[in-house]
Image (cartoon, rainbow, N blue to C red; front, side, top):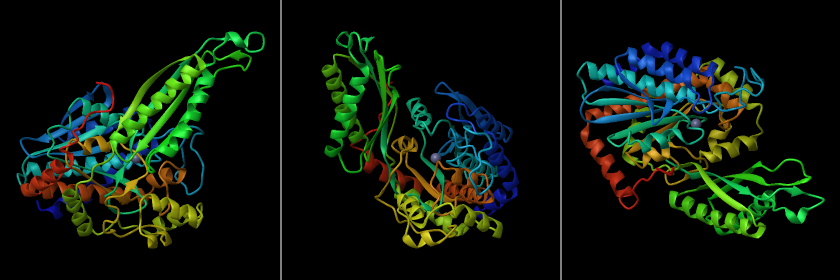
Length: 460
Ligand SMILES: [Zn+2]
């Protein structure tokens, strides 16, 4: 079974993969509730002869499927969670199937299914004895809350991997060379003393005052942190009726920065601001870290492996109908909206004039930072990892929108998914066939991580 036969095997299996991705698209489930998607994928792998371990790290929807034995052990990361409020019909206009229900606005129905397809095709090659080693597919829940892979990492499930691949649906096809922002999600809960706001305000100590003064302090902090850092908050409890001095209030912060240490430093400074606000208002404050993830460490050796496979496969073959759908979606953006979305990918300017990116772009974003966060970052600090972006959405489509939800269930998304499955399968095949590539990837990883070993951000 040559690599081309591997890709042919994926062609033969295409309808089955499309069905899996579409079934998951039609039953969107939010983080930690992905029962249907997780069971569907785990049972397909189990039936194919993979050894499946479910309920990983206390998460019912996390699973690991493994086939083969011995070294190398190569991993594929899959995701399948949807986003709240993004329910959308499979049409090029905003129309929820059910108002307020979830939808696959990040295309994780495609993400996980492509990884599953790649893993199944590698199993075929292992079975024929053409390559040897172990393939492991990780069914990772709750990417959107940045918890699934962090909790799995705490259990050490990625520790013995020799290398790992993943990908993400996008409005462009290229190796994903940029990093992402490390992040903490943390809540601050203030506790004061209730009293009658008109008759005895002097008897009360307002927790809401604590929250508001903390936010003012945080807004002054912004000038004195690194440029690429981001602080956002929402008041999750602002008290009840105004005639009560509020005894309880809560604010929820996201802190992002290019490096994990910067996020940790900013978090410590924010905690000081919270303590200062509590002191000023004579209230108490306690913080709770909900989630924390790493920035993504690229691996040039593995990225090259993916890139060569992408150029060999050419690109997803979009049909006339796909182009028409993309054009209709594109009418919902202005040219400047389109450009600013593509700038977040650092995409070359000429792509903004297209409706669908249908070729393979040479890598253009190495050393840059994509302004979002993902728990893939955590895995990239444990084992050499590379990922690619594959055209599944019209040019200018941002993730987490009705447009990306619709495209993730369309022919565009499905064709991108098959291209992703082939890219990852080809990349894995190259690594099984050439142990030196894995050694080079590990050397690069060692050089970049030797002074900064991985520590999961959640309390152990
Ligand atoms: Zn995503």
